[in-house]
Image 1: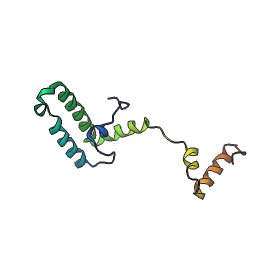
Image 2 (image 1 turned 90 degrees about the vertical axis):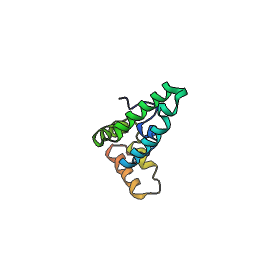
Image 3 (image 1 turned 180 degrees about the vertical axis):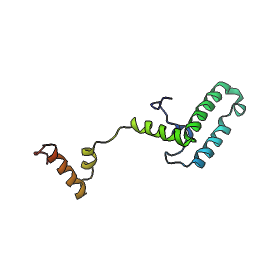
Image 4 (image 1 turned 120 degrees about the horizontal axis):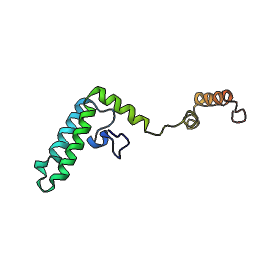
Length: 113
């Protein structure tokens, strides 16, 4: 299973990452009806590929353990802001700016502090 694929399982099923099990099931059923090969007889191979994609996404997201593992892997591939970048975006937050100053002092970057 490649998590770095172009679309995530959430995108395939068109649900948010915090979707409930019921939302995932409802989305899967609706999309399965739409893309089922019986509904698309003129595009059988395309419909079969869509169904395989939907089934794989549903199998992962409907199983709590597999979904947790998938979410961890998905999160690992997302670019994360560094601590310094996050604190710099909070210019009006005195607490965040204090943390940033403390960070610079602890790192020995006195000119930045």
